[in-house]
Image (cartoon, rainbow, N blue to C red; front, side):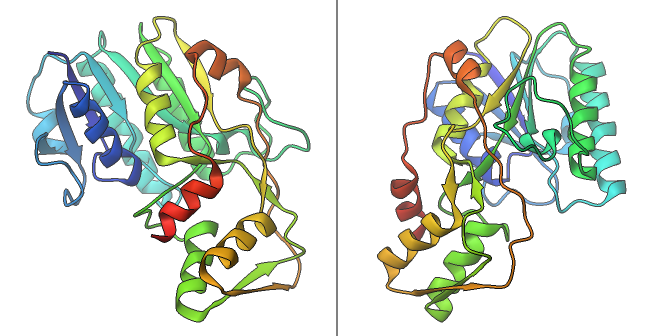
Length: 269
């Protein structure tokens, strides 16, 4: 039986990944920071210090810690822990979960090799993590686009407008709704992350659907499912993001399975 470690196991992606690995008959060590209420009870559950003070034989190391709400100091602490993991387990297959935020803004579709255009603090944190991981002999770096699905708890666009629809029966959209985003359903994201662990070459993967969905399209679907109204107000301040993940998906011999409309309906159930 293979053994996998998931750092950040209580998060939206981490908790789903733990379940996937267990379903693949792997022994899972689930490492959390503050909470473990979302972690599958079949995993070995440890906090960060407990894990660092123990020694295991590990086949796969998944690192999912850090998000855009963390402070500068918190991000530095997370990368310090990453350095400690790398020093302790230098020969383990390491799967580092990065973000498409590293590319910044672009006027054309982003590929794996696109430049880093004025990356944010969070994006710089992810890039520094990628730099640390690239020192290893065996790694995969996965740059994930916007994730969505049931039980997501952040305050990003989809959860925010779903909350408006349910509580106020109205959705307010900035601008004309033509801003677009690439959405990847949680189960598809987990599958991509799992597949990258099986690739022997050291690679950077662009984990996106390759489909552009506008704010107007998302709001219209929610309106269709809930009966809420949609208002278009003010000016759109956020940029659009489009991706071409065809190279990565070809290497993985895979494509997303969940259509946006189906995934959104699952969020509303």
